[in-house]
Image (cartoon, rainbow, N blue to C red; front, side, top):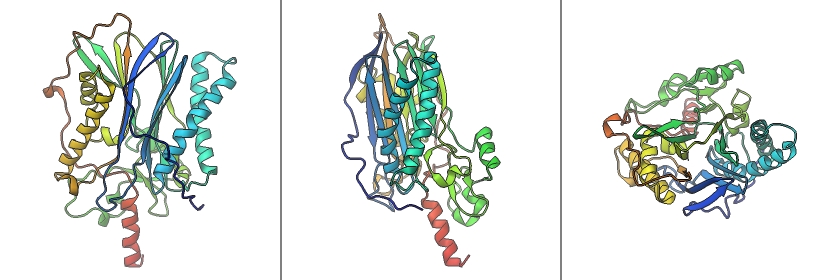
Length: 372
């Protein structure tokens, strides 16, 4: 295991942006970004491991959310925030005259993620049990967008359908719940089990209301225990099929497409897709306020999830980017209706256990006590 260089790779990063207007070709956009540190009562000085990126020029734009995890998750996410856009830009430049535009973007996004994973591996950041998700959107000047996703952050499209604004997921979470993802890992020698299945003692008597998702484990030990099946970093888990190749989707943007939301699972673990889109569209004239309302709602739901006050709460980092498309001649004076509360299916079931290695460390400590 390589040593970790203790440097402040997060320097210069600001946790929010104001509402900003840009143009990409004939597409007019308004966007804002916001991230908020989570809370762990056992580690009150924990750092925010989430971050975001926004990069644009007259012909394209790239927005992304990165959700770090593990002991050095914040260094991994900020490393990728800095490195991935540069790799993407260089890849597109090298292939621009060789292939159709869609193929160039797909190939460039794929290679940028894979190359960024290799760059992180070669860096002085210890990525043995640390890494980051990456969910991004590349907006091209031909009115098309390309989604790239690694991990369990998520991107939604808000589109008008009749009299309603409808949330449409443009990414699929990479977790062992997906049979295709689990099979890739088991084909590489992994076991797919929850904490409770690996060691029933790791689930307390009073934790019947805590979600215990399937995780990726080596056959010969209690590691790495990832609740995701793709990431950038996580060199130990990579040997078990947890890799950095993105899933991608390209689609045109028509006047019915009104907004995009990119967010980490600190949002989507507690607020359903439709409610996130409804909140954003309610504040369609101010992307920064839309971001704030999404984060505030997520924070509120985390407290309800734990049924406790702020001083006792345990909740994840929360990050979102909200992008509005301003189509020519669009009339916002008569907006589509939000989904009614009766139509929203979310409510509090099992509490969400954060996807960190803290529980793994507790299991290892118990094993040492028992001399196993």
